[in-house]
Image (cartoon, rainbow, N blue to C red):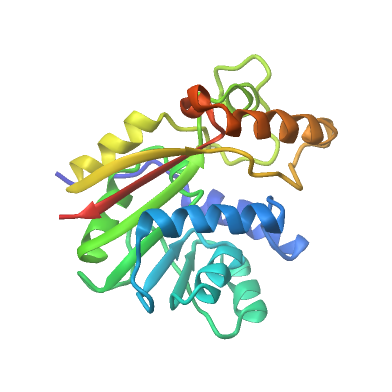
Length: 245
């Protein structure tokens, strides 16, 4: 049975195109970007020279880090303006404007897939998971990173059930995820799935000026959570990963 997404593609494009006026959509510090990509590479386990697709690539920050690490990368995003920035900033990388629910790649043509903060923008992610499964070769792997609903800060600031929820700087479908629910979606698509958690990714920017002054406090507490083993399920980001059987 096919799944129809309720995501409004035109609103998503308009939202991310608006960030092109600031020349990029890059919310973490460079050190945190590198730490995140190294964690994703460790879980994807790509061979040197493996063909990797960065879904939801934005202006290409993670695509560039993947390519610099030795993995020929294709960046795909729904925003034509962010894709244009990526092509200008990183001319040695192939960028494609496209929809993650209808990927423009042949079956079994990709070695590894990174879903860059993408899944939490989809109200229903099974179509995306099915497309990732389709384009990966047998034995190919994916990693998705998304904000964790179990993290108190992510819940307070970005979950609609929170009394302190802020809609500033988010799309109408965007919300933190629950790790077990996301793992189930990819498992049902045919993957062998695992979950890890990551904190101490330091933000350099949030959309809300009212919240921006709290960033140093958030970054400090999040760094503490990263060092406490019992706090793993409450870390800020969920890394869902898997292999195509």
